[in-house]
Image (spheres, rainbow, N blue to C red):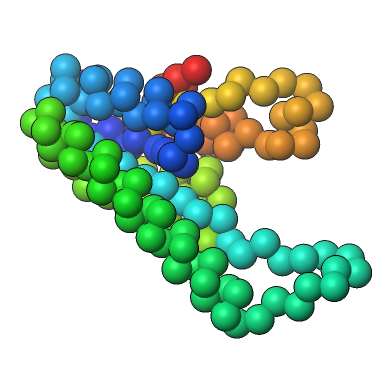
Length: 147
């Protein structure tokens, strides 16, 4: 049924619930997985901020996000392989999560996306956004949301 599952994570405790569910599902179905994390672009100060962004600030931010992503993905991949699941990893830097998830799912020919969601509603959703809602509304393949 689902032969290639894309599992999304941002490293949070909530995202780990989605990862665990995706790994269990992949194990039960004998599916291959791709684990993805995306890191946001460098936050550019707005208004009359006294802080001037230097190339070193951006390079440091980029290096830190890359290192964090590599460590996160390596730990999940090791867990998957311990379970006997073939796993690939993808880090998409300087991207919004929803766009990275949708693009990676298409490029890797995944036929299911598994991700966690806070389930925000109303004003919180408007202010904080919902990457999960964007993925669900735009994905050509099924999306399993874990809460």
